[in-house]
Structure formats: C-alpha cells, structure tokens
Length: 331
Image (cartoon, rainbow, N blue to C red; front, side):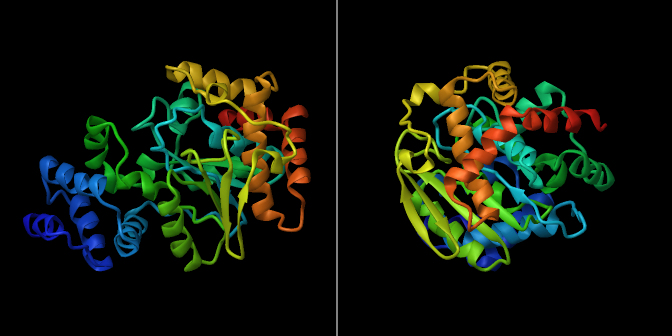
C-alpha cells in the first residue's frame, strides 16, 4: 500500500488493473485500517477516474456472492447516497411502488453510512429478513415482484471496510460503487448520483454494459429526483433537464417536505405511510416521480404522465404495500 499511496500523493491515477488489485488486497486483509482510511481519504480530496472506478467495480463483482435469478428482466433503483440531504428513503419506497405496478425489482441496498437511515436500516426495522438464499429471493420475486439484495451479505470482501466507513461518517468512493455492483446484474437500472461529474462516469460505464439505464441527479445536489429543483436524466440514447412540472404533478417542493427525520424509526414510518397511502402530498409526489422514471426505463414509449399514473395506482390500490407484506412473510 505504501507504493500505491505515494503514487496517489504524487497526483497520479491508478490504472484499472491497479485499482482492481487494491480492492482484492483489501478483501484479503493485506492492509491495515489506517492504510485503508488514508486510501479512501485520497478520493475525498480528488475525483475518481473512470479507470479507477471501473477497476473497483470489476473487483467487487468478481468477489461478490453471485445471484442467478434465471435471466429475468428486473430493475434496480439504488442511489449512491452521500448527498448530505437526509431525505426519507425515496428510492426504497419507489422500489415497492414499481414492484406493485408489475415490474420485477432486484433492489440493492445497505445500511446508512453518511446518512441516518439507509434502505437496509428501514427494512430491518420493519421486519424484512435479509438472505443470500437464491431460492428464497426467487420466491420473493414470484410472490411480490421484489427481492432485496443486502450488500453486506453479498459483498463479504468489504467486511473490513464497513467499520472504517462508519467511523469516517462521510461519503467515500464506496458510495459511488453501490449502484454499480448489484450481484443480481439487473437488466434495467434507475440510479441516482450525488453529482453531475459522477453521472458522467456512470454514463460511460453503463454504455459498456447490456442494460437499459436512467441516471438521475437533481441540480441542487440530491441523488434522486427531489422536485425541489430541475433534474438531469441521462439515458442510453438521450439526456434531458427535467423541471418539476415535467412529471405532471403540479408541484415544486421545499426541501423540508422530503426530510427523512432524525431516527431510523421516523424514516421507517415515512416509508410505511407512503406505501399505505397515508403520506403527505409532497412525500407521495416525490415517490411518484422517481417510480415513474423507473417505469419509463422499462416503457420507453409510455408518457411520463402515464408512468406516474401507474405508480399512483400501485399505491392507491394497495399493491405497493402488499409487496412489502408479502416480502416480509417469506422467511
């Protein structure tokens, strides 16, 4: 690691192969906690290159517990986190809504590191049981159109890194990797990123893969559609700046309306209220916008208004909440 750090301190970048080797060496316990923390610190002070991010990604995918779900079409709705906004779990709520609308969702998620509550925190609080059993994941998909891929179980190589990330308490380059290393390898991705620069890196990496994707970033810094400002949406064939009015929801939200609370319990209660159709108007609308964009990632010829309407029907009909209860019941 000493040579790697000196290389980086000299303002040089790693090749894809070198970046991959660092992650593999971390997984094999070849570096101590201080060395790993310093390595992560480098990328808090400068941008990660596309070659470095690609190498980190390749290592994690090679080391992860593989998930073969039989080649089904599915979507992951996973944000990077790290935007410092402490919203409620919008992408998690949206995942249940999309599943309730009839689309397979293989949701990748983790505990919160730089936020109070990650997707794994709220689902664990509600009673969801994490598993690596592929048969159980398949049963969840068959029953409810959704299964949850709890990152710590599927990326044991990162066991060493987890306590260091928690101790640091701010976003690191590992935040960038979450949406890129879903072991289920979904055919569709609707992912939120915390910066426009990272959106461009994601665009390059997704272009190398055989998947349909939508990369989302709110121009005021959210790693999702926030409806507090315009959002950029990047797809394989186009990109656009989308004002809140684009979604046909007639709204422009203040940031306080999508705040996630100060505890995991508060965040979980908001998630439940969305799925039970008892959330505030603002909470529901921001979920509808994100779920609508995910549906549109599947349905290229459907208008965004119709996609958001399908999401609304999922909530109003009770199907979104049923996805949650059925998923919890399969233990």
